[in-house]
Image (cartoon, rainbow, N blue to C red):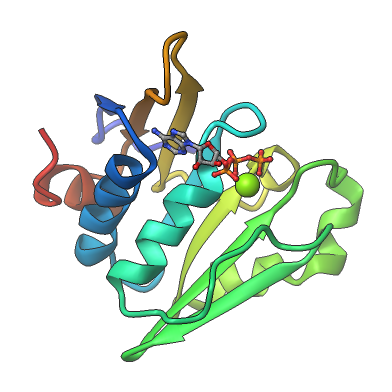
Length: 163
Ligand SMILES: Nc1ncnc2c1ncn2[C@@H]1O[C@H](COP(=O)(O)OP(=O)(O)OP(=O)(O)O)[C@@H](O)[C@H]1O
Ligand SMILES: [Mg+2]
């Protein structure tokens, strides 16, 4: 249950290029801590994996970020940080237990980024960031609606230096 002490906070940003999306991701990454969870929502090709790439790079990960193969979780590590990247597109709720995602979410040492998180909704902490990507009509612009409530989410939203 969401604590009533926390009011949802929402930021709306526009990223005009993949680089701007990665810059936003990098700012959040540098502010993030182990145990933080970021859910990446929005249609195919709207920039979710691009965001993960910027996030991992900002933490010093050299391994190339790609879409996880169907139903798999990818791990990135650098400088003492551990990132878990899941893509649950087309994963059904009853298949979630097989992926081992729960351990990553509960263990506390991982920062988890989850594309298409709907199938895992029963496992997600209330205190997380939800980022909704939308392609704007013209060119490469994407709108990002970043929302969250809870101590971790507030820390990310207020300290990342986002406008
Ligand atoms: N402002 C932008 N932000 C992010 N990506 C952009 C932007 N403008 C153009 N792009 C391009 O759009 C594509 C986004 O692809 P990406 O794989 O990140 O999407 P996705 O949301 O992860 O899709 P999927 O749901 O299939 O996993 C990339 O080719 C990227 O270069
Ligand atoms: Mg993707």
